[in-house]
Length: 85
Image (cartoon, rainbow, N blue to C red; front, top):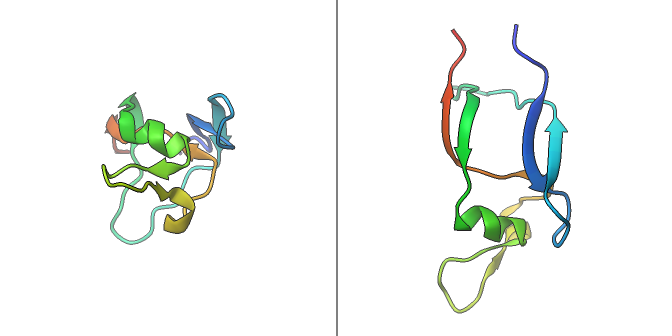
């Protein structure tokens, strides 16, 4: 039986400090699997997402809201983890 929590660091609003985010775990649909993250790196794109935009090195930055993303967002996408047995 898996834990019924999903913890991470993120911001609930742009400009706010990082805080712990504890929310229900996602429910995989189709072929994706749920992975227990044991380690995670945060890179520049995570920092930009935290600031509310995606920087693709173009003259204008893309707001994450136009991509359908809303806070709170859990930072980190460079992960190491394990799948359930």
